[in-house]
View (tube, rainbow, N blue to C red):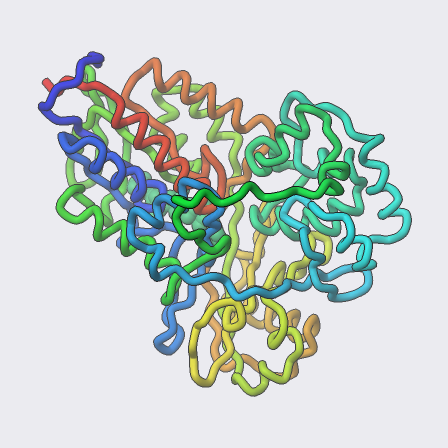
Length: 474
Ligand SMILES: Cc1cc2nc3c(=O)[nH]c(=O)nc-3n(C[C@H](O)[C@H](O)[C@H](O)COP(=O)(O)OP(=O)(O)OC[C@H]3O[C@@H](n4cnc5c(N)ncnc54)[C@H](O)[C@@H]3O)c2cc1C
């Protein structure tokens, strides 16, 4: 591959039509008007893990249901697509945690990696006295961690096991459907990396009053932190898809079977014939990434071979609005979280009709999450068993006597990548090896982390790298 840029046209193949692939395709097409971009998607629809089902005319997300717009790449994408005018904020409200004292509201300031404020946790009474005392020793027990370790080990070391089990397992563990003692701090809790490396105290930091920087007068109006759109996150996929129109050749129902060398360039083999490309972006799960790029790069095979993908499922339940309105949890809280030791079939519940304006006149809709890494619940149970299990468990937990009037289970087999300790180093080695080959790129949640914020950042970064390549098309 030469390093000269010509106007002859950069041929780009993008494998995977999830949010990563869509963002990458759109940005490459915009930044390189000379590019011929082909997007290959194996299934018959775009969006990947962003998907909704129709519940009597109401679209209910069964994959991702909220986007975090605190991240700059996500916020600017939303603005560039003109989606900032229609964005809706998740309704303010607390989630409940199942604690040693039963269901308790999640104290203010507790995030996926634990408490960021001291007062609300103290007042909540959720931690035992020995647990609180151990957590309070953090300024003394803190150590420097220049390398990666698991999020669970980091929090155990700083605050004690009770904080990990009570807060981090049900929050970060549920987000990733994983084991917090296996998930990499560097890959899944990036905000803690500077503190881990410096050894600074999180508790001392939390006690210091932080004054937010003043807003610049020319700054755009702030976007909600956790957001969606009327009709759900499909709006993001629809906006990206229509932005690709006329700029990118989108081929659904066409899986990439193999990536092969073709002189100085590459060829993506499909059942409908080859796609010639100077640059191939692979934005699919770990197994498919390993299969497509592993033959060219042992480092990719190693990096992706180390990523299990958890099988999960979403069960959508609807209750008569009157019955739901009489239930305190469904009326007053946005959701419910369990830790991995407490979970039966149900591991979390999102109270969709309270959190989002779903506007069904008669029904109250909730969604229940099922399955974690290492469990087969989400694949082995029949629909009836899964729906029956979560319905009973939810009824017991929140004291709901009513039966659902609608229930549907949607499965996500081998979908959520488990980024274990050392993942980012393995991915860096893989990218290094690919850069020496030239023209092959890794992207998406299997490389860069789970969640729309990470996948948008990943699609943006890979697009920048591809757009910067100078390729002479022979
Ligand atoms: C139940 C659930 C709830 C979630 N909740 C949230 C949430 O609330 N907020 C949030 O930010 N994130 C959430 N996530 C995570 C988030 O949705 C994902 O991290 C993100 O959508 C991943 O995007 P992606 O493009 O990297 O991968 P994917 O969406 O998995 O897209 C990959 C695409 O590649 C295709 N593909 C696979 N193999 C091939 C092949 N050989 N050739 C061509 N195409 C192929 C697949 O069909 C798929 O469409 C959730 C995920 C799930 C499953």
